[in-house]
Image 1 (cartoon, one colour):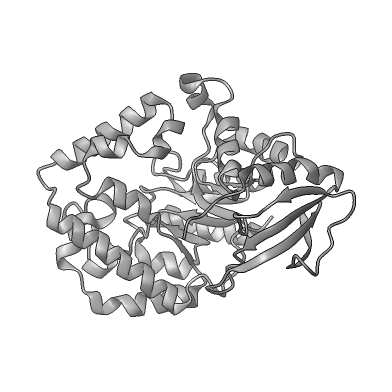
Image 2 (cartoon, rainbow, N blue to C red):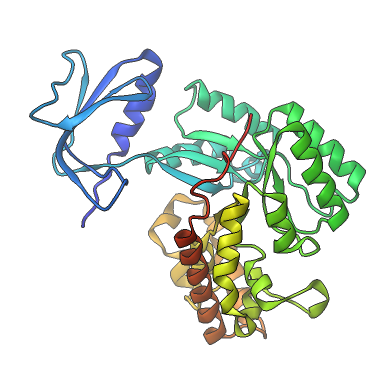
Length: 354
């Protein structure tokens, strides 16, 4: 199927929502995503930020004063969610130009992404979130983490506890866990976060491990961090594990996959696999080809160069093995399928609490 997006219509709807103007998408094919189907020749009426009516074009009459968007030959879908976004921080704007963050969030909306979860938090993102919420900027709804909890930023339990309290008071939507936390420090983060009602998400530090992460009921585990390591029985004193366990693909116990998927579902933990990252970075794809992907034209050339060089360096590592990399990517696919089949993320608590 050839998909034709309606990005300008989305932008139009966002810009008109503050005035509660009606927008009618006429004669459009709707993909409701409740199951595998397409509803053809539909009219969708939007008032403000709500869908007011949807049905066959012959049965739905658009309001007389509505802005009409001709949807013939096009498709209308629910807004997409980017659950692992990195919103530029002020330091990036110093390198890549003023307004870079505003341009990035606009590109999300222009491509049909109406919700993003910022995983690299900064105080500036609280301001950006409110500007987006009040339609001062065109962009998606933003949920933002605070500055990350790592072995450097949170070197001890007392520092970590204070960070949790400060980020809750500042109004961040959730906490971001990075690698490097000690088990003792992580336990204090989890306990304090639970006591004040803020979720935490992100990486699974090596000293914590997947079993403890599931028991702590992360809002989400990102990158499938800790899953391959758990299947391989890896521990921090067992040598390098590679990029999210990429060096361990030859020594995993795949009979544990179903159990881990079931436990993830029972713990109410969502998983954000970021599989596209693995496909691009771990695969044997030529770095030059990666740099010529169509989407790269929207990025600053210096950033593309940086990514291409990082992939060249990864492929040049003595430990890199094409066959093992392929097995690693396939293993992650099996994990994702098992998690989906088990219903992980389907019946868990809300991703964010405010």
